Image (cartoon, rainbow, N blue to C red; front, side, top):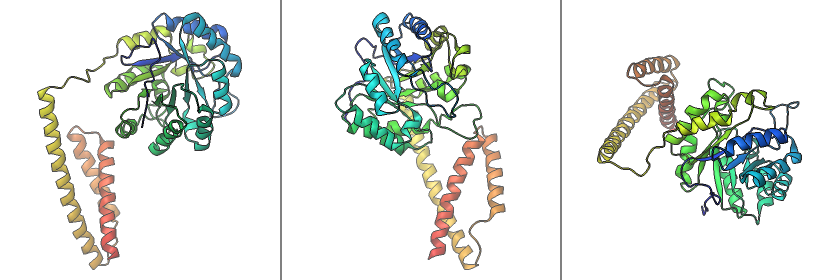
Length: 353
């Protein structure tokens, strides 16, 4: 995929690229006060929600076009770039008419190919950077499809935003990180910059700092963080916004790993990993051969494939063993379930013969 740099003139090329600002533009005073605080810290890109799609009706759904002149004032008076979310072709036209510098497509919109195509059509002939959030559900193909639709419209300044994935069981995070999905996105589209959205992943301001560090450790290119001059009184998503001063503290305490350094010790460790992976594959292949033999026995003795009690015993015992060895129980359950599914598939093939 042919891409151009998303960096705008005057924005440093160093990691992380920072976009910051309130979840919603509420009043002109709130926008300017927050922007002044961020500009004083050297932050160059001011983000603010103008149109806010809410999960349920009745909440604050954005100030609308009325807020766009406020962003233009941020540009004029503070020299910052501005970024807003767009969900329709009309939003695109209105944002461009007010000289917005960066557009992003939200998670709910990314999940709808019709909406993404409408936005892509409206973007034809422009060279504005467009950032695309992951869809609400963990569907990598849907995410890549949205990126391709925008790319097919001729846009070459594209980045992805990882904001986590919705789950019925929220647990710690508002949206589960599922880091393996943006990692796979990077594997498939290595030239595509990836920005992390810790505000929407965490949903709580105390989770923003550790999530930012995780993103940097995974070599993400930037961060988009919600910052408000008075977070406790924010009209939307108050619990996940931080003041400019707190944001400055978070950024200044990030540890940015050296991605260019390669040592002989690391090379040796990687060779060990390669050898161990080969051993694992050989062991798994042997296990599947035994599973086929078990499948043949079950077929000859007219036995069902699934032995629920045996499967339950294996899960409990192996997970307990893994935890004693310092591994996470949920991780081992995922591995065992995948191995069992592959074993069942082999035995089903035996039964069909």
